[in-house]
Length: 102
Image (cartoon, rainbow, N blue to C red):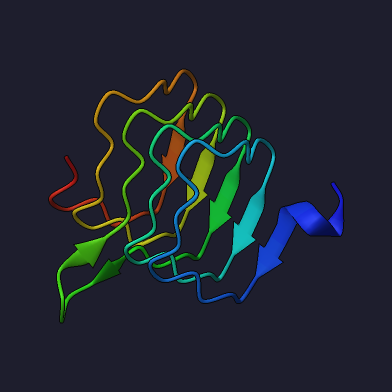
């Protein structure tokens, strides 16, 4: 995997990746609060130790309509995240916080 597809320790708060091809991307220890991944291609993506929820503002990440085939989420706080109408064949969540996920 190339370094351009591996993001570590980045604050991506409020960024929009809607409709973007991010297949194979690896996010490690990133803040993705308020990020839009709506309709993004996230096949084989790996999210590890990421935070997608801010309890002070109730902002959360939106993965609606994304392709999450073979994606992996490890130890992520995905509280209240939006996962409506995703393509999630073989999608994996391990040790994640998923309270209020829609």
